[in-house]
Image 1 (cartoon, one colour):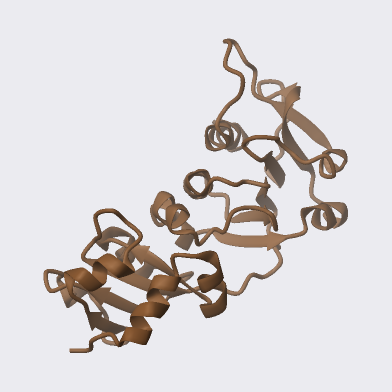
Image 2 (cartoon, rainbow, N blue to C red; image 1 turned 90 degrees about the horizontal axis):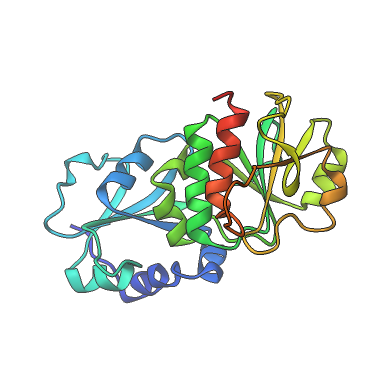
Length: 242
């Protein structure tokens, strides 16, 4: 039964931070359910598994390297207040330019929980690709990974210069703004790019001129704004014809 060295334990701890993830090209996933999702996904490449004595190791394929860790070691490895009995280390996939006909585009999303929820929404509505601006939160942030509930393994995620990308795309570009065509009156096209801005400032000023159809969710009450993930869910439902 393999045990971790002090250097390996240090490397795993550094995956809590973006710098460590970028240096190692790896990220953490925690808990049996999400680990099982990763094991069954073609988009997830598991580097190794770490588990405590209570974990049922029968689900671990012989091809995957695994380590037995003590509860104290798991406490150091985990990013959760209550560590799970299994953690997987996944390799960060290479990001290719998007080539689909239906893309969810996120401009400056900063909250990792919101991003995780948005990945679940994209997965739910069958939107295969999510494109993020370079200034958006790291999709491999532990909070994003947990909030995605496994959808991160079923969604192609890309980071790029949105301004350059939108300048050259041939797809119609829709953008969520406070004032635009109501989602009720929109002539939704199934192919296109839906742009959603940051939680605090919306779509950036450099992106606004590149939007070909400005759309809005009608407001009937007095709330100042909608959470980015909630707005995304409403828009994606309409885009999907619901």
